[in-house]
Image (cartoon, rainbow, N blue to C red; front, side, top):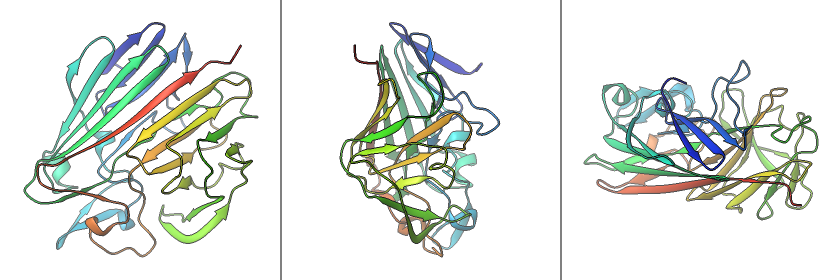
Length: 291
Protein backbone atom coordinates (compact mmCIF):
# COMPACT_ATOMS: atom_id res chain seq x y z
CA UNK A 1 0.00 0.00 0.00
CA UNK A 2 2.93 2.35 -0.63
CA UNK A 3 0.76 4.69 -2.72
CA UNK A 4 -2.15 4.68 -0.25
CA UNK A 5 -3.29 7.86 1.52
CA UNK A 6 -4.38 7.31 5.11
CA UNK A 7 -7.28 9.17 6.70
CA UNK A 8 -8.30 9.00 10.35
CA UNK A 9 -11.30 10.13 12.42
CA UNK A 10 -11.59 9.08 16.05
CA UNK A 11 -10.82 5.37 16.17
CA UNK A 12 -11.55 4.88 12.45
CA UNK A 13 -9.06 4.76 9.57
CA UNK A 14 -9.43 4.65 5.79
CA UNK A 15 -6.66 3.91 3.32
CA UNK A 16 -7.18 4.79 -0.36
CA UNK A 17 -4.74 4.01 -3.16
CA UNK A 18 -3.95 6.53 -5.88
CA UNK A 19 -4.14 3.67 -8.37
CA UNK A 20 -7.83 3.53 -9.19
CA UNK A 21 -8.71 5.89 -6.30
CA UNK A 22 -9.53 2.59 -4.56
CA UNK A 23 -10.21 2.11 -0.84
CA UNK A 24 -8.16 -0.84 0.36
CA UNK A 25 -8.82 -0.69 4.12
CA UNK A 26 -11.60 0.65 6.33
CA UNK A 27 -11.18 -0.02 10.03
CA UNK A 28 -13.44 0.95 12.92
CA UNK A 29 -12.03 0.48 16.42
CA UNK A 30 -9.35 -1.81 14.98
CA UNK A 31 -11.86 -3.99 13.11
CA UNK A 32 -11.25 -4.35 9.38
CA UNK A 33 -14.42 -4.10 7.27
CA UNK A 34 -13.02 -4.28 3.71
CA UNK A 35 -11.71 -7.34 1.88
CA UNK A 36 -7.93 -6.84 1.51
CA UNK A 37 -7.65 -8.64 -1.82
CA UNK A 38 -6.54 -12.23 -2.29
CA UNK A 39 -6.51 -15.23 -4.60
CA UNK A 40 -10.30 -15.29 -5.02
CA UNK A 41 -10.42 -11.61 -6.01
CA UNK A 42 -7.42 -9.32 -6.18
CA UNK A 43 -9.27 -6.03 -5.59
CA UNK A 44 -10.90 -4.36 -2.58
CA UNK A 45 -13.23 -1.61 -3.85
CA UNK A 46 -12.62 -0.56 -7.47
CA UNK A 47 -14.20 2.49 -9.10
CA UNK A 48 -16.06 1.59 -12.30
CA UNK A 49 -15.84 4.03 -15.25
CA UNK A 50 -16.69 4.77 -18.08
CA UNK A 51 -18.78 1.60 -18.32
CA UNK A 52 -20.18 -0.79 -15.76
CA UNK A 53 -20.14 -4.50 -16.51
CA UNK A 54 -19.05 -6.29 -19.65
CA UNK A 55 -19.08 -4.89 -23.16
CA UNK A 56 -19.99 -7.39 -25.87
CA UNK A 57 -16.83 -8.79 -27.51
CA UNK A 58 -14.77 -6.58 -25.19
CA UNK A 59 -15.29 -3.44 -27.25
CA UNK A 60 -17.44 -0.34 -27.59
CA UNK A 61 -18.39 1.57 -30.72
CA UNK A 62 -18.39 5.33 -31.09
CA UNK A 63 -19.34 6.53 -34.57
CA UNK A 64 -17.65 4.29 -37.11
CA UNK A 65 -14.80 3.20 -34.81
CA UNK A 66 -14.53 0.45 -32.22
CA UNK A 67 -12.40 0.62 -29.08
CA UNK A 68 -11.23 -2.25 -26.84
CA UNK A 69 -12.40 -1.98 -23.26
CA UNK A 70 -12.28 -4.28 -20.26
CA UNK A 71 -14.96 -5.19 -17.77
CA UNK A 72 -16.04 -2.10 -15.78
CA UNK A 73 -13.89 0.18 -17.95
CA UNK A 74 -10.39 1.42 -17.15
CA UNK A 75 -10.51 3.77 -14.15
CA UNK A 76 -9.46 1.06 -11.70
CA UNK A 77 -6.14 0.66 -13.51
CA UNK A 78 -5.31 4.37 -13.86
CA UNK A 79 -3.32 6.42 -11.38
CA UNK A 80 -5.28 9.38 -10.02
CA UNK A 81 -3.74 12.57 -8.65
CA UNK A 82 -4.53 13.55 -5.05
CA UNK A 83 -5.61 17.15 -5.64
CA UNK A 84 -7.03 18.00 -2.22
CA UNK A 85 -6.22 16.36 1.08
CA UNK A 86 -6.56 16.91 4.81
CA UNK A 87 -6.59 14.54 7.77
CA UNK A 88 -10.12 13.24 7.24
CA UNK A 89 -10.69 13.76 3.50
CA UNK A 90 -9.09 13.48 0.09
CA UNK A 91 -10.12 14.09 -3.53
CA UNK A 92 -8.62 12.09 -6.38
CA UNK A 93 -8.73 13.29 -9.99
CA UNK A 94 -8.38 11.47 -13.29
CA UNK A 95 -8.27 13.29 -16.62
CA UNK A 96 -8.24 11.85 -20.10
CA UNK A 97 -4.93 11.17 -21.78
CA UNK A 98 -3.38 8.83 -24.36
CA UNK A 99 -3.98 5.72 -22.22
CA UNK A 100 -7.70 6.49 -21.79
CA UNK A 101 -8.35 7.72 -25.34
CA UNK A 102 -7.25 4.38 -26.78
CA UNK A 103 -10.32 2.93 -25.06
CA UNK A 104 -12.72 5.88 -24.79
CA UNK A 105 -12.41 8.82 -27.22
CA UNK A 106 -13.70 11.59 -24.95
CA UNK A 107 -12.19 14.41 -22.91
CA UNK A 108 -13.33 14.14 -19.29
CA UNK A 109 -12.48 14.78 -15.67
CA UNK A 110 -13.42 12.29 -12.95
CA UNK A 111 -13.18 13.40 -9.32
CA UNK A 112 -13.63 10.87 -6.52
CA UNK A 113 -13.71 12.27 -2.98
CA UNK A 114 -13.61 10.49 0.38
CA UNK A 115 -14.52 11.91 3.77
CA UNK A 116 -14.08 9.78 6.88
CA UNK A 117 -16.12 10.06 10.08
CA UNK A 118 -15.76 7.89 13.21
CA UNK A 119 -18.43 5.44 12.00
CA UNK A 120 -18.83 6.25 8.33
CA UNK A 121 -17.35 7.10 4.94
CA UNK A 122 -18.87 9.59 2.46
CA UNK A 123 -17.85 9.07 -1.16
CA UNK A 124 -18.59 11.61 -3.89
CA UNK A 125 -18.20 11.30 -7.65
CA UNK A 126 -18.15 14.11 -10.19
CA UNK A 127 -17.98 13.29 -13.90
CA UNK A 128 -17.33 16.34 -16.11
CA UNK A 129 -17.54 16.40 -19.90
CA UNK A 130 -14.54 18.41 -21.13
CA UNK A 131 -15.28 17.55 -24.75
CA UNK A 132 -17.16 19.47 -27.44
CA UNK A 133 -19.58 16.60 -28.07
CA UNK A 134 -22.05 14.68 -25.90
CA UNK A 135 -20.30 12.06 -23.74
CA UNK A 136 -21.92 8.74 -22.76
CA UNK A 137 -20.74 7.24 -19.48
CA UNK A 138 -21.59 4.99 -16.56
CA UNK A 139 -20.06 4.97 -13.10
CA UNK A 140 -20.13 2.64 -10.13
CA UNK A 141 -18.36 1.46 -7.00
CA UNK A 142 -17.58 -2.21 -6.31
CA UNK A 143 -16.70 -2.54 -2.57
CA UNK A 144 -15.96 -5.94 -1.11
CA UNK A 145 -17.00 -6.00 2.54
CA UNK A 146 -15.71 -8.78 4.76
CA UNK A 147 -18.25 -11.58 5.18
CA UNK A 148 -18.09 -12.04 8.15
CA UNK A 149 -17.20 -8.66 9.65
CA UNK A 150 -18.65 -9.59 13.07
CA UNK A 151 -16.67 -12.75 13.70
CA UNK A 152 -17.70 -16.42 13.46
CA UNK A 153 -18.68 -17.74 10.02
CA UNK A 154 -20.81 -16.48 7.11
CA UNK A 155 -24.03 -18.06 8.34
CA UNK A 156 -26.93 -15.88 9.41
CA UNK A 157 -26.01 -12.74 7.46
CA UNK A 158 -28.61 -10.94 5.38
CA UNK A 159 -29.24 -7.89 3.24
CA UNK A 160 -32.08 -5.74 4.55
CA UNK A 161 -33.43 -3.44 1.84
CA UNK A 162 -35.08 -0.12 2.59
CA UNK A 163 -38.08 -1.14 0.45
CA UNK A 164 -39.45 -4.30 -1.11
CA UNK A 165 -37.61 -5.38 -4.26
CA UNK A 166 -38.32 -7.66 -7.20
CA UNK A 167 -38.17 -11.34 -6.25
CA UNK A 168 -36.25 -12.29 -9.39
CA UNK A 169 -33.07 -10.98 -11.01
CA UNK A 170 -31.68 -11.10 -14.56
CA UNK A 171 -29.77 -14.18 -15.68
CA UNK A 172 -26.29 -13.23 -16.89
CA UNK A 173 -24.49 -15.49 -19.35
CA UNK A 174 -20.92 -16.75 -19.15
CA UNK A 175 -19.65 -13.71 -21.05
CA UNK A 176 -21.19 -11.26 -18.57
CA UNK A 177 -24.06 -10.31 -20.90
CA UNK A 178 -27.63 -9.81 -19.70
CA UNK A 179 -30.15 -12.30 -21.06
CA UNK A 180 -33.95 -12.03 -21.25
CA UNK A 181 -34.23 -14.74 -18.56
CA UNK A 182 -34.74 -14.17 -14.85
CA UNK A 183 -34.13 -16.35 -11.81
CA UNK A 184 -36.08 -16.25 -8.54
CA UNK A 185 -34.53 -15.30 -5.21
CA UNK A 186 -36.11 -16.01 -1.85
CA UNK A 187 -36.91 -12.86 0.13
CA UNK A 188 -38.36 -12.71 3.62
CA UNK A 189 -40.19 -9.43 3.17
CA UNK A 190 -37.43 -6.86 2.65
CA UNK A 191 -34.82 -9.25 4.04
CA UNK A 192 -32.65 -11.35 1.75
CA UNK A 193 -30.93 -14.17 3.69
CA UNK A 194 -27.39 -14.72 2.43
CA UNK A 195 -25.67 -18.01 1.77
CA UNK A 196 -22.79 -19.26 -0.32
CA UNK A 197 -25.32 -21.21 -2.38
CA UNK A 198 -27.23 -18.01 -3.22
CA UNK A 199 -24.05 -16.25 -4.33
CA UNK A 200 -22.51 -19.19 -6.22
CA UNK A 201 -23.80 -18.02 -9.62
CA UNK A 202 -23.59 -14.64 -11.30
CA UNK A 203 -24.22 -11.34 -9.50
CA UNK A 204 -27.67 -10.54 -8.17
CA UNK A 205 -28.57 -7.35 -10.05
CA UNK A 206 -31.46 -5.18 -8.86
CA UNK A 207 -31.91 -2.86 -11.82
CA UNK A 208 -33.84 0.33 -11.04
CA UNK A 209 -34.05 -0.74 -7.41
CA UNK A 210 -36.78 0.69 -5.21
CA UNK A 211 -34.38 1.13 -2.28
CA UNK A 212 -31.98 4.06 -1.85
CA UNK A 213 -30.33 2.31 1.08
CA UNK A 214 -29.70 -1.17 2.42
CA UNK A 215 -27.97 -2.82 5.36
CA UNK A 216 -25.57 -5.77 5.37
CA UNK A 217 -26.63 -7.27 8.70
CA UNK A 218 -24.75 -9.76 10.87
CA UNK A 219 -26.36 -12.34 13.19
CA UNK A 220 -25.24 -10.22 16.17
CA UNK A 221 -27.10 -7.17 14.87
CA UNK A 222 -24.02 -5.23 13.78
CA UNK A 223 -24.40 -3.92 10.25
CA UNK A 224 -22.79 -2.04 7.40
CA UNK A 225 -25.32 0.40 5.94
CA UNK A 226 -24.99 1.61 2.33
CA UNK A 227 -26.84 4.72 1.15
CA UNK A 228 -26.76 5.99 -2.43
CA UNK A 229 -27.64 9.14 -4.36
CA UNK A 230 -28.09 9.08 -8.14
CA UNK A 231 -27.31 5.36 -8.46
CA UNK A 232 -30.37 3.48 -9.74
CA UNK A 233 -28.93 -0.05 -9.69
CA UNK A 234 -27.66 -2.30 -6.89
CA UNK A 235 -25.70 -5.53 -7.31
CA UNK A 236 -24.52 -8.22 -4.89
CA UNK A 237 -21.56 -10.41 -5.86
CA UNK A 238 -19.16 -12.86 -4.25
CA UNK A 239 -16.91 -15.81 -5.04
CA UNK A 240 -17.77 -18.46 -2.46
CA UNK A 241 -16.18 -19.67 -0.30
CA UNK A 242 -14.10 -16.47 -0.20
CA UNK A 243 -15.04 -14.28 2.77
CA UNK A 244 -16.33 -11.15 1.03
CA UNK A 245 -19.60 -9.76 -0.27
CA UNK A 246 -19.63 -6.91 -2.77
CA UNK A 247 -22.48 -4.42 -2.36
CA UNK A 248 -22.24 -2.41 -5.56
CA UNK A 249 -23.91 0.83 -6.69
CA UNK A 250 -24.19 1.38 -10.46
CA UNK A 251 -25.59 3.91 -12.92
CA UNK A 252 -25.21 1.46 -15.82
CA UNK A 253 -24.89 -2.28 -16.40
CA UNK A 254 -23.51 -4.87 -18.80
CA UNK A 255 -24.52 -5.23 -22.43
CA UNK A 256 -27.56 -7.31 -23.36
CA UNK A 257 -26.91 -10.42 -25.42
CA UNK A 258 -26.60 -9.51 -29.08
CA UNK A 259 -26.11 -5.78 -28.49
CA UNK A 260 -24.50 -4.13 -31.51
CA UNK A 261 -25.29 -0.45 -30.96
CA UNK A 262 -23.08 2.51 -30.23
CA UNK A 263 -21.93 3.28 -26.71
CA UNK A 264 -24.57 6.00 -26.36
CA UNK A 265 -27.26 3.40 -27.19
CA UNK A 266 -26.11 0.92 -24.56
CA UNK A 267 -28.91 0.48 -22.00
CA UNK A 268 -28.76 2.73 -18.92
CA UNK A 269 -25.87 4.92 -20.11
CA UNK A 270 -25.92 8.60 -19.08
CA UNK A 271 -25.30 11.26 -21.74
CA UNK A 272 -23.49 14.42 -20.62
CA UNK A 273 -23.66 17.58 -22.72
CA UNK A 274 -20.42 19.49 -23.33
CA UNK A 275 -19.38 21.30 -20.16
CA UNK A 276 -21.92 19.43 -18.03
CA UNK A 277 -21.09 17.67 -14.73
CA UNK A 278 -22.89 14.69 -13.19
CA UNK A 279 -22.74 14.12 -9.41
CA UNK A 280 -23.26 10.91 -7.46
CA UNK A 281 -22.72 9.91 -3.83
CA UNK A 282 -22.46 6.82 -1.62
CA UNK A 283 -22.27 6.62 2.17
CA UNK A 284 -21.08 3.67 4.23
CA UNK A 285 -21.93 3.50 7.91
CA UNK A 286 -20.89 0.92 10.50
CA UNK A 287 -23.69 0.24 12.97
CA UNK A 288 -22.68 -1.32 16.24
CA UNK A 289 -24.88 -3.83 17.98
CA UNK A 290 -27.68 -2.26 19.97
CA UNK A 291 -27.29 -2.58 23.74
